[in-house]
Image (cartoon, rainbow, N blue to C red; front, side, top):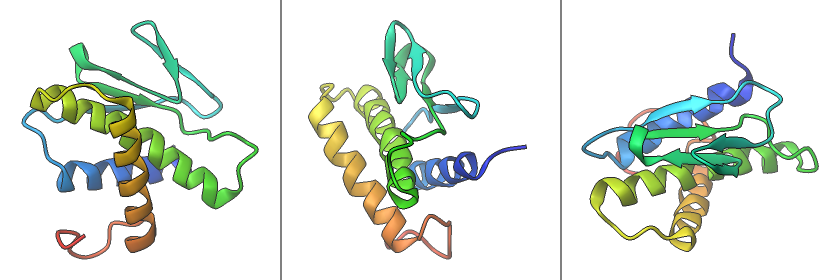
Length: 126
């Protein structure tokens, strides 16, 4: 049985895939509740993209010092940041942490504001 944060991440991932489709969609792997960092391919963080596997690994436990809404935003930002790395690899774009972070903040805020974290109606206009 999944957690509320896991469900949030899955909904957001589905939205990302529909709004920013790629020729080779990634697989989403959400760490079990309680994990605070991910290690994959020698990298550590709240999320890690593994290009060779086209896999996005993310935590579902946000930093505890954040308030509830900040935690939801942080989790969405972690996922969107790694999704942007997938887009960079898939499209042959240069890898850029700054660009991935800007994308993450923009789309996470937009989704949380306009969809309130839900997949509602037609999202094509977002």
